Length: 256
Image (cartoon, rainbow, N blue to C red; front, side, top):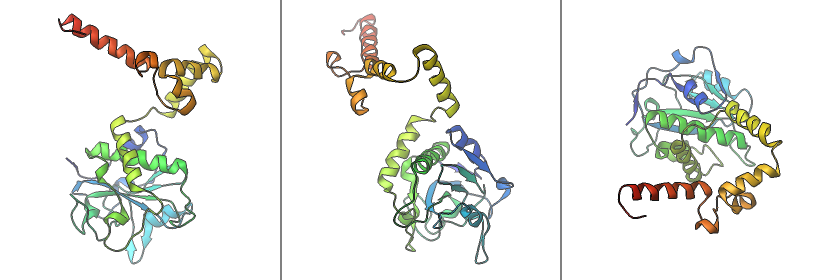
């Protein structure tokens, strides 16, 4: 499965994932022609690591005119939507299921702002947004994390980007976001926190006690959902679900 046509939905899909998005004027009409079918996301770093890296991605240079990627990802996790049309970012290379030496017409490019050398300057906000944004795009086009690819993995021209990122770990995180769906927005999280505070007081040890009762003692100590030994290692929610399943079997004449 893949998406046919230009990804004019990029800004909406990223915002729905709870990400901050800047739409640059004219992005829906910007590009070097139209996409064919979209099969994945190609991950890059800009190589500059500066606040104005996006200008180079948008404008390019005389020998390589812009746009050079559909998206630029800032260090604070903000996405800049540069173009909806084809961009010159892939170069020569290959990846299973992608056309050899012709990926520009089939994959969306994300240029993440980074100098691309040690000591690496990735931020936690940027990595989180990189993974979430990639997952949102892949979910939209009906692909999984196997089609989230580093430029260095695709390239036959010796590219190194995005340097400093373990793509196996990156893809595992992306797949988790794909399967988990879009997370709650910041506004929704704030509403829940306000509700809890109104009924339980400021978030502190009392809230930890509630989480412990629901999830097991390991949740407090190690951030794990360890469950309770009295419930055969199940959390409270899992135990209730198990009881419900057993009751439904009894109602159907089976054995619990």
